[in-house]
Length: 458
Image (cartoon, rainbow, N blue to C red; front, top):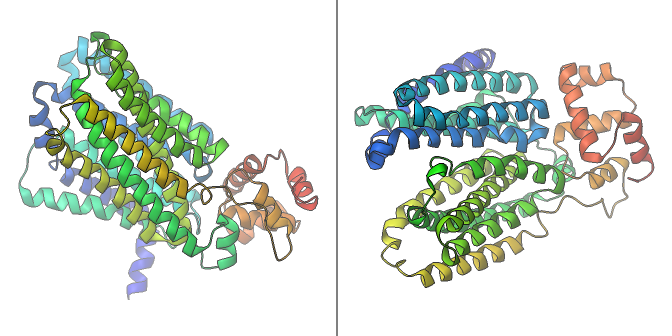
């Protein structure tokens, strides 16, 4: 009986998740709306719209960051540009057409619904077992979208708000369950796909969680203290989040071309420089330097956390994804909660400088523990290098389990039709995986890829 219900759920998963997401979205509206709207006073409409649009844009940029998990680079870039231009439109509307503000939430709702529909269409047709990163990315988008739109809502009773919170938390879990099983139980595939053992990956997860606690909690606490003291010029009102949105695609390209490790270095460097700009500069220069470096630092930090959690979830399973994401959200909330008490101690600029330097010291110390473990997998050693292991070793970024299966079939000189039939994927999906494989291995064609495997990765 249970298997029949599971079969029905998987058959109609798109409809079920769409209805569940809509239900959770509606119930979650009153969660933080009263607090945000009353806390910001007259500035609430503008700030809430920027809050929604910028964070929604952040999770759409996930398509750019994890290009290997989505259909095409062009789709991720196109959606990012559309959202960025739409967000820019808020400034003239807010300034010159204030009577149009009530219409903006409806427009963003329509836009969000269209984007979610596109994401689910891609996910249902492209997602394959062993690629939990895409599932994690999509569930993060949906759950955070639910939590962010609450800034536009009014107030309802506590029971409805609690139901909304529960539905928002359960939505990522529903995405994992209804999408089918992910990950792989083959130890050799795990080892080849990541270059790390399961035990070592758990250690990486612990260090990453400590790193996120320090950077998100302490960095967020400092940012909450610094931001009210900045004197923004009149022309820049409402533009504080633009550096963050501009940094995200840059961080995505860094992740694609240089790997994950530089992201963390750029993150802590940007946050540290932002704190020092606040201490040693004044006026417009203080606002510009502090805003640029702090927002840029958090942009690199977010991309670093997303990429590492997606990779670790593909290796360790569901618990790693939710553990890391929970630590991230908890650290942000911790920083917000500690800010009022910290204001008692942060009256002097010297204390801000001290905490900034201490923050950098602790963050760099933790990052040093990830120095070797965040390297791309090196060429295989020990029990005889196989062509598959050699091509994994020369890849700039780790190949996913599905991409490894395709490489193995290519090495066995299987035809395109045979690969499609054996893996049960569509021609467009295979084409997308091949593009990602060629990009990661710096090859232009199947012939060049096979030659590189035969010649030992040269």
